[in-house]
Amino acid sequence: MLVAVCGLACEVCKLLRDNACEMCGCVPGTDERVREKQRRMEAELGSICTILECASKKKVDFCFKCPEFPCESFYAHEMPEKYASPGMKYKPFPYRREFLDRFKAEKETSC
Image (cartoon, rainbow, N blue to C red; front, side, top):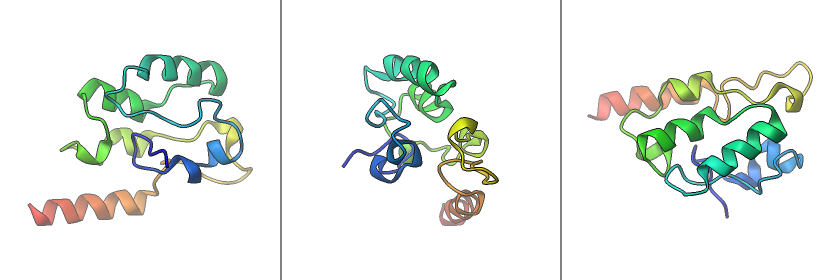
């Protein structure tokens, strides 16, 4: 099973399921193929993955390992519009705002 940098199993990602992801899934933020994945995403999807870019800059393999998770990258990230179903909101993507807010609140109270 492939796991994307954001923590989503690639097999359940709408982009991969709809054959919109020609990259066969994501890579960890510390992977040497990040630049190539980002270049291909921009060419094929029209934009880069801001979550992957953030993880790469912070040198974390998966976002859940980052002390700042969930950061603004998750709240601002959205599915490329041309792959979103008509009338559906895919922002934030891949997780709903309620999940991110609950995760953040749990994290703050457990520290």
